[in-house]
Structure formats: C-alpha cells, structure tokens
Length: 449
Image 1 (cartoon, helix red, strand yellow):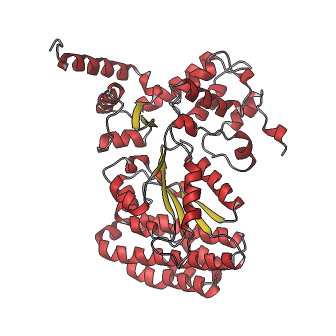
Image 2 (cartoon, rainbow, N blue to C red):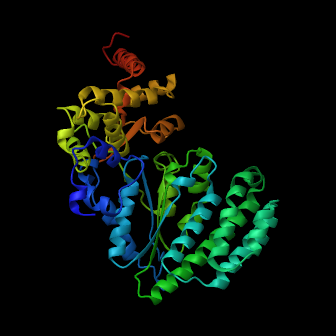
Image 3 (tube, rainbow, N blue to C red):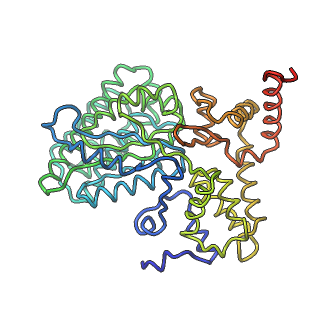
C-alpha cells in the first residue's frame, strides 16, 4: 500500500473501519498513524529507555551480575501499551535483534494462571522460531515432549488419552506444538488439584519454566551463529488477567519464574498489581516498573494530542464543530476508549459527518456501560478521588476501579488519579460527589458541622 492509502479519510465507512479499538497499530499503519504522546502523558523516553536497557545488559553469559534485561510494563488496558511494544519490536529488529512477540490476550481468561502463561509463551515461541527458520535441536524438542507426555501427566494425574497419545506421536517442533495444544484443556481442568498440592505444583512449574529456558537458550545459540545481536521476548496480554488470585500467582508467588528467564524479556502487568502493596516485590524481581499513564486531555496540549490520534486516520471534515473535542475529553485520555468513542459516534450519525448529537449518544452509551456495574460504594470512593486526586490507590476496592478504568491514572511529577469523564456524567456520581463535598465542607475548620 502507498502513503496515500493511509491519508486521513473523509469517508465515514473507511473511518469506522480505521477506528478499530481492539487491534494495536502495527506494520504500515504503525508507521503512518502513530502519534508520540509521551510528553502529554507525563513520561519521556518510554520505549527508548527499555531498548537501551536491553542493549546495555548485553546478555553475555560471562558477565557479572544479571546478564539479561527484564522489564515490566504496566498501564490501563487500552492505554496503548501493545502499540508501544510493537514499536519496541520494530526498533530492536532494526538494530539486528530477533524479537519474539507473544500475545497472550486471546487466551487470557479468569483461569489463566502461571502455568498457562508459561505454556502459551512456550507454544508461541516454538511457532515463531519455526516460522523464522531457527532450527531448534530436534532431540531437545522431543525430550520436552516426552516430559509432557510422561512426567507431567503422571505428576498431575491427568486422565486424558489424547494428551498421552500426543506425546507419543512424532518428533521435533510439530510434535511439541501438537502436545502443547492438547494440554490447553488440562489447564482449566486441573486448577483445583494444583491448589491442593501447592508444593508439588511449584516443583512442576519450575520444571516447566526450565524447559522454556532450554528452548530460549538453544534459540539464542542458533541466532548467534547467524550473527544476530540477541533474542528478545515480549510477553504481552498478561495485564488482562482479571482474577486477583491469578494476578497474585503470576506476578507475586511465581514472579521469579519470569524474572529469571534466560533471555531479554519485556512483560505486561495489570496496573492494579503495580499500584498495590505488591509493587515492592515486583520491583525487587524486575527493577523499576515502566507505567504508561493516560493522556492528560484536561490540558490543551493533551487535547491536541488526542485530536492528532484521530486526525491521522480521519479527516477533520468528518466532524461537526466541537464534536471531536467532546469525544477526546470524554475518553479520559485512554486511547482505546477514544478510538471506540469515535467509532461509535460514526455509527450513530445519520448525516455525512459526525454531529455533536451523535458524539453525545456515543458518550452516553459508554456512561451507561459503567453505570451497569458500578456499586453504591464505588460512587462514594470515586467521589473521594474527584475531591482529592492525589489519594493513593492501594486497597482492593480502589485497585478494582483502576483495573476496570473507572479510575484513570495520570502523571506529572507524581502519579494522580481521575474519575473517567463518562462516569462524571452519571447522575448517581453527581449526587455522591455533592454529598461528599458537603461533608468535607462541614468537617473543615469553620464549617457548619
């Protein structure tokens, strides 16, 4: 495709298709539609800093200390992390690195735990290395398949004939991939038993992580023979794990399994986890956490940055006066919500442009979406953050609001929080905010209380 194919469109249908809130920018779209919003987010050098860590770490086995860079990236779902990680992939590949981008998102459910995270990583790494023509040792792949088919099955006592047969058929990458696919069902079935035998589970998980490390080490050797700089693993999608129990398992209980991968690695984590009391443990394992805040659309510069994100794809002629600004402000600076609102406004217009009425209808739909699940206690807590944005979000009710984007994270010289603008339109929030403001005035010195 030519550059003209990516020029801002004045066709509503094309604009709707370009505003896909679920697909991160990549390839030519990344080249033509990407907007650098780091200054408007309050962070500088987000991707460049991670790339520099990887280059400085080197990855040489002869090095003293920790030879590999391991970075943990966080931020709201939809904040733009995946797009930034794909930019990191592109940047490193231009410098001669081989980058494996593992997207766990399609497999992230409430049931995804540490085992499932390692297994999806192993499967996608083997697939991508095979596609790249990196020849892993066949006897090594076969040995891992045998471990799955014998030791693991016996240890977990899984009665699954298909899994057993899968371990016995074929050799090499294809056999291992078949077996890993067969084990997807076991991941869900075995949860209760694994919780019962926690010590045995930890040993078994350590073995599983060790086999992943064997594959990565073998791949690094083959790449070095081909004069490639090194191997980098990007594990995206773990920030979507909903279950607090499984978040804790992956990022706290078994964090060392991921922090000790024998390869440069960049992993995503839920923002509710890195803002929790577990943050210190994460920093001990991974170092300082790189967090991507929301764009500060409350400021003129932030609003203009949000406009640029849309206007890279859509002509300004498509929007009635003030309609685009209203959509940008109502997104709260979350990129996915911004693109989603524009898409929904396009679907709600009966004219050749996005009218202010269509924009308000889209915003109202998002507001009602929040209103469908927010509880009375949530509104009380959100009202407190509206009055004091600097309050820490460390207890579970606040972390839940943060994970579900009711509370958005921003940054100047320090982190602060804001209630999602779509929630601010709800009458229940307005009522609770008025009550909270009155109580605060009464409690203040010289108040009426």
